[in-house]
Image (cartoon, rainbow, N blue to C red; front, top):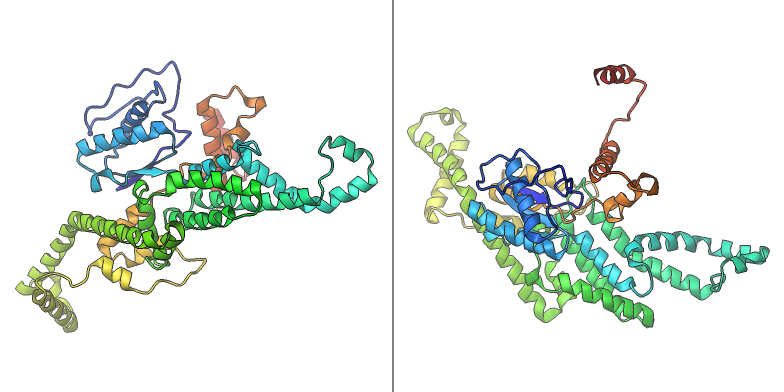
Length: 449
């Protein structure tokens, strides 16, 4: 299965008047030669554009689509659910198709909290400014004592006093949680899906602590933040349950802390009910994967059994202890009605959780253990691949604004996208670029052009 993410700088979002409108694809097998045009930003138009791209790329098995929280995207996802149902390739009736961008929700939470005290669209700049400024508190005091004009230059508010610096530290500490969280979950070189639930449960815990603040301004700010937080993450039925499944598929966590996290977020009375609901949904998804993939496993097992019974094939050359081991397992299966007493999921959950290590590679762990958990391994492959953010952290804080500056304001959207992509490729390169060493090759390239 494939995981698809709708990105803000999508090449389909072009308004080039020279391009003709792409006809709607009528068959999942058809090939589209021209790029789709976005006639509008309405949900159906976005959904059709994504559909055309999927057909062109040959992707018909879509597990999730990660989008931001614009209302038009909700309509686009509904449109795509119908299309996938027609293609007959949905998983759980596309219940897990819509993944809301976590970075965007965090940004909305902060913006609501700061709308009365700051320019909310640049809250990250506010945090960076305050975080640096507080280190120079003594420098401000000393400069005031040595430079008479300093106070006049700062205008009505004058030089920050002790109370101002205290408020500065509080605000910087508050915003640091959101800033660092955004950086963590916007990463593109490591798995993020298993971090989602842990991050929002920690954020809920912090907001609940701030709500009881004696500072009226902080309390009002946090009340607005919590209201926005609860809008998206306050009701488990409105959330994509993959964020819980990804936590369970991390051998560091499994179900170990989930019930406690629910208790902190929703209270003791509701936590047990929510926990059982997640557990039940996970079992249902596992059973669906079992139906999809168990046939292949059974085919391999049947071939092995037939070779053993007939005495033909390479199996006859196995050591006697391997034959006896297979015969013993076969007898046990027949005794239990041909079914395993425990499913892969139950075996996995009953094993002890892994010790936390900084260098732990989650994908490598599943690669090694997929032989023990073949069906669960396929679930992990699909769920852990889901991005929880539509953009990298640089884009979350307006990379485009730094590329498209006043001196380059005439750049087309295609060139801006190319510059940002080139920047990412350059940064991701493991080998340093040495122009002098490649000068001869560059000269040949220029002659060819």
